[in-house]
Length: 361
Image (cartoon, rainbow, N blue to C red; front, side, top):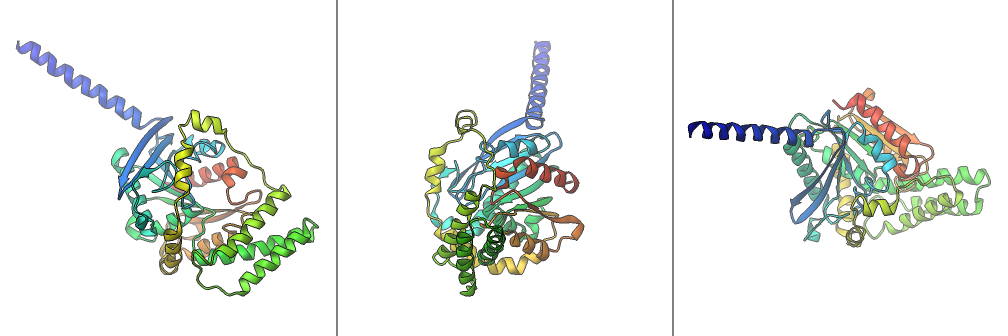
């Protein structure tokens, strides 16, 4: 009887060892795909971790909007995301009330501080699941660039990540609208001088100049409408010029092979963003005060043709943060607009990977 009990105990121990080995291979491999959910302050946030995790290097993609989706990067822009996944584990998380995230979200939680806290919980979840020895790159696009910068303003939180990658981020909310007007004027002058839609560009240049002459020192949700209308018209004219190429994945593949849920994403996208956008303008004073204290290795990438968050915002980041010059860089992609992962996906991805290989421990 004792021998039977002894053998049973040994069997259980061996089975447990095998299970641990299986779990370890599942967590750390060169082709992982994990679906996680984080419930926090009324929001159920969807997280997909996918790519090469053998070196325990994670790249968190913080999407734009507010109201867009990180899952879109893992479905519609695979020529971009797949390149990074060869060497890094990409983390695609949809923010509260965005993408395919769910939950009963109180509109009052749509603040910069809440989004920063959500991101902090995502990072803590990664450390809890994958271990304290992982390395994390924080990569934000557009509003995601803004959100990641807001996260890094706190030194304790900044210490949790290794590098910052800012892609077309509008870091200072009021200044970025004025920078857009300046950039539109620059592009307009260049295009008109070449005889490319000169009437239309000169008209937009005059509108942008008039907006700058109004000397707005602080925008609001309501007063941003005029510069955004000018931005939209400029984007339409750039697209009409045919200078940008659009490279995306298949919608069929995204829905049927990657389980992207367009109806949930569309419903989330229709939620009001007034509270969060007004809060961003209020947060500008915090950015001004604390951004000079950021010391993290930083790569900023902006599209030459981006008039939604102009390259001047990249210059603002480069010139403001305290990061040593050898650990920060500003790159302008000549054939990209506001979404280089759509216009130059492979070049963007290779640029990021090359930089992370040097700066992410």
